[in-house]
Length: 157
Image (cartoon, rainbow, N blue to C red):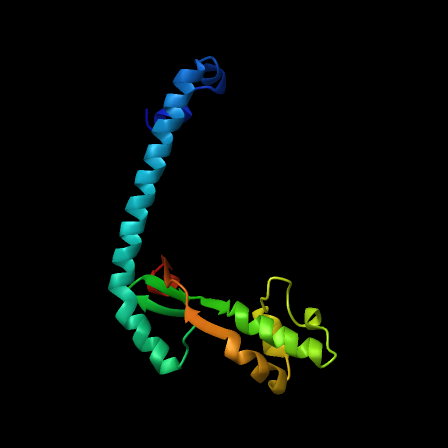
């Protein structure tokens, strides 16, 4: 049974089915969802393949490694996002915390218990403090994302 057929059935009719029948329906729907996700992933790969060079070129021109950029492809607005994927070296942060403690500071005022530093906080610190933490910081690109939407400027009313 597919999703549309299932939605046509009253809840009372579904509830009247045996547990085994409901389990089969759940398994069937889960398989359809997994297949739909594989198709979506495949389509998103094609979209990324289509626009990666243009997006990369625009990012280069703008000198913008992360965040959102927008461009047009006919009547379609393309939005490309590359999030920051920030990680902190736990051993280096532990060493920094120990140094701060030895200097009489409280590292908990700057760092989370699991030795992570929030990006927004780091950006607000004085440069001297940032420089002390930089050896533990790695910034990599997250997975690029593309979103398509109507380009209303290209649609004549």
